[in-house]
Structure formats: structure tokens, C-alpha cells
Image (cartoon, rainbow, N blue to C red; front, side, top):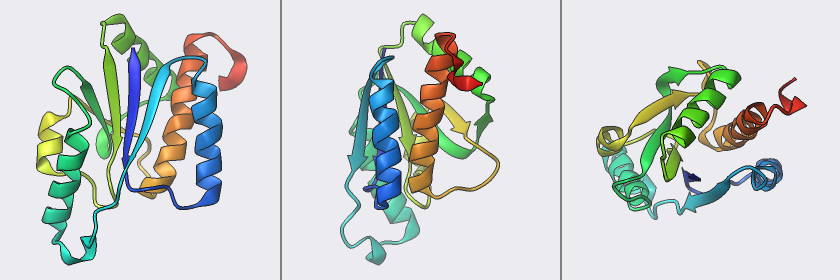
Length: 156
């Protein structure tokens, strides 16, 4: 199985870039992972909120084909424990999913078209985090999930 993590706009803060780099490198030992930062929209400040989300959504949906399983990281999604999330990953691997796409939207979330296309929604927490911080939190949890599946000690 291949995993894609698709995010809207670049990661700005150096400490987040460094953390992402660490966990993306660690994940190479477990899974084929592609990290895709989609460019921020030009003149986004001139768009309405709906237009912004729709255009970001169009760009996001171009990153997948019809056979991809799309999982949105969304505040209204299902919450998992780390062990539960690892079981979710294992279930997808066992079911023969070829490409599992996790998407982190922009600051205002996803368009209705993206919600319609999504197969699953996952919430990392009931707390709200910046869309840039979520990237680091998610790749750490993805790494944790694979170490749990392999029975390695990282989780404790």
C-alpha cells in the first residue's frame, strides 16, 4: 500500500519543517509515503471563503484517481486512540487498498466536493490546531501506528 499526505500550502515554520523531515524519514522504513504540499492560491485574499475552499478542493482532488481511498483530517471526523488508528491502517492494508490519501485542508477546511469524495474523516483531537501543526502531529501518529503494528517499543 502507498500512502499520500496531501496538504494545502507550504509549511512556513522551520521547527515544523524539521519535525516533518524527521518523521517522514522514519516512515520510509515502513511504508511508501509521498508528501505533497500544494501551492497556496494566488490572490486568495480576494476570494470569498466558498471560492477559496472550492479552488483548494479542485487542486486537492486532482491529486488522486478514482481508486484512491481519501481520508480527511477534519475536526468533525472520528476520533481514534493511537492503537485504534494503527488498527485502521492495518485494516486498509489487509483490504488491498493500493493508495490511501490523507488530506489536510487549508485554514478554513474543505469544500463540499471534497467532503462528498471522502471515504473517511478522522479527527486528531477535539482541540483545534493550526493546519500547519496538524501535519507534524499526523506524521508522528502515522509513524506511531506503524511501530505499534510492528510491535516496537516507540508507543510506550
